Amino acid sequence: MNTPVNVGILGYGLVSASRTFHVPLVMFEPRLHLSIVSTLLPDEAKQMIPEVPITTDANEVINDPSIDVIVVALPNTLHYKFAKQALEAGKHVIVEKPLCITSAEIRELMELAHSKGLLLTQFHNRRWDAGFLTVKKLITNQTCGETRLLEMNYDRWAPEVTTGWRDGTELGSGTVYDLGVHLFDQTLSLFGRPLTLSAELGSQRPGSQAIDYFNITLGYAEHNVVLRSSMLASLPAPRYRLIGTAGNYVKHGVDMQAGQLNDGMLPNNPTYGLDTSEEYGILHDGIHSQPLPTERGAYDTFYRQLAAHLIDNGEPPAPLHDAHDIVALVEATYRSAAEKRTLTGDEIGYYSV
Image 1 (cartoon, one colour):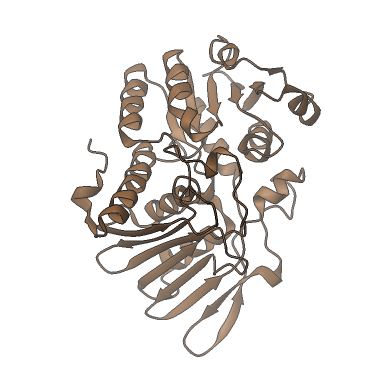
Image 2 (tube, helix red, strand yellow):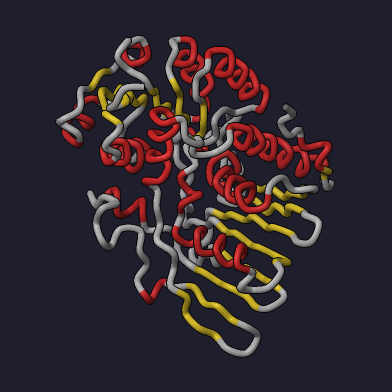
């Protein structure tokens, strides 16, 4: 494929994944060119990114013969529709998480992409969270010994129910389809497919009809992973808590990269992706505690690897079957909670080649 690779983005707003992640990161990668953005808020987009052509018609982007890659950054319920249209138009497709609402939809798109020789993948940016990269390094090096438990919490303080789609009742709303998808993806990238899943779901906020709380336990042969989230966490739990046979690691705080990108900072800034010393996690060996410098966050890795895949036939940013298995785990979460029982791996519905 010739360079630069022309990219079109579907979806943009002042508070959106496109504004925070896709637009700045695509524009930062020299082998990609942001050719056009479609949005229902054209005046806001023109003000924020005056150098990029704007349209209100998604079909104009999808059907443009000069566009090589389409980024679908729309509400969850629209992912399948527009990803399918883009694939049928012969475009490579990047989809915000989750790739689709159901695993059946994803399998259909996987077959379509394969038949046309096109790339289809989910935007797995949180594989490059600073704290997560630190946890991954500790597990790989067995700094805390053999892992016995990893807890990952994604809490927020948002006591008021909104009118947005995330707080709606339609399939694809709620925190499991939102924050839980990130946690499942991080788990899969660390340990692969869990052998068991047990889940508790709830609507904690007054007036909430969507799931806004989850507590999910994923079982492996020698350890467990516990994923939690609450929208009523004014004092959030640690983002990561790693328990091993030789010690523990505890890290608080959300990743800094979203805030930095929103403020206009790019990955070539020397402070990009770096925690301050006050934000370091604590490593404890059973006797002594010490602050551990956090690894540098690297969201730009996704689009760098995307460009390398399309231009140089390098490895794609993440396996497509992981995007499928994430949604299979979401579906299993709802089933486990409804049936009040633990599901085995055979019941989860992982992708079978």
